[in-house]
Figure: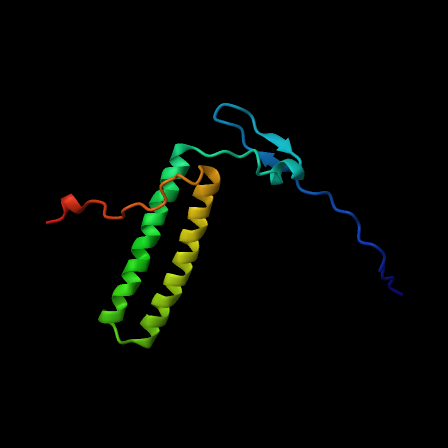
Length: 121
């Protein structure tokens, strides 16, 4: 006769959380509390420039979706453009919020996306 145990499940050890060290430094084990504490995480100028560039990139995508109004009669294309526009606008808002929270209200959050115009013939 087989016996089935329906008691409390055996506790399982949590997997270790490893924080990689800086180049040349060892990694270290950290607690789940340390891993989830984002308050101490800073940002660099490169982070700000990246977000500004991504806002420009997403803005370009929304401008491209607006071109479909005069360039396609396809309902499928119009729906796709609408989905792209909604998602890109949400992501732009998230990135703008991040910039304001990280840098402050005076940060430039609108950046031109017209890179390389001088290279075009």
